[in-house]
Image (cartoon, rainbow, N blue to C red):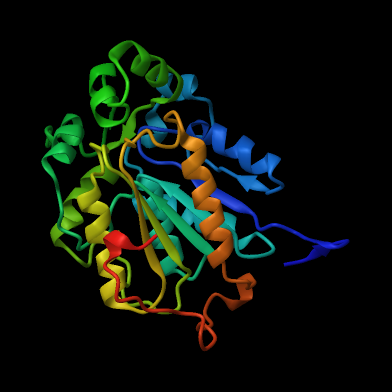
Length: 299
């Protein structure tokens, strides 16, 4: 990191959105972190550079979009930075972050209500119900699918009544790239699928998993199974924090500031100070840790 006067420059934060959403979903976090002195980047998935309203009218760039294409897109953005950023991903953005970290990118990573990578075979009933608009139609693989306001209320904003949820839906919701969800679902029992990561990678950046106790789309069981894979696989940091009353809408849900502040405080504490030239280097001695505490209790 460089210094300006007597003050060390704060790391860049890269925010990665999930399925059915755009970078607009991070608007509160962007403003809060920028006011705290961070440089914040929130790039869209490839083809989603327009506003929500324009994407709804023409979602064709989402048709046939592959997960690897999205990950490669963010890989190029990050490698053009001067130093390793803090990575934060929500939902499928969390899976994208896991894959980027597995490539050696990121100083620290926060995974919020994260979708799981290949080989984490946990699929709660609530997740099945929330994704049924896509996975319930075997002919939807190369298409796009919008959630109805009622479906969005169940999957994302179950803390709100229908009228309040509709306001969130109108501002943020877009069609999903069906192929990405299908590939993730099919990867549950295939550890070599496109969303594969190396859970034994001891040289990766530290992880914090943040889960919501009332999340329907990615219930806590998914997050716990995901973090256990890392804890059991290597000594690299994989921490877990659960917020009991939060839903999949946690990045915009009332009280999101508490989650955002915890995320940046943890990431700042655990961030590795390295340049992008160091992405293949191992941790220096003493920079990894193990814990005998179960992942449910680690904060």
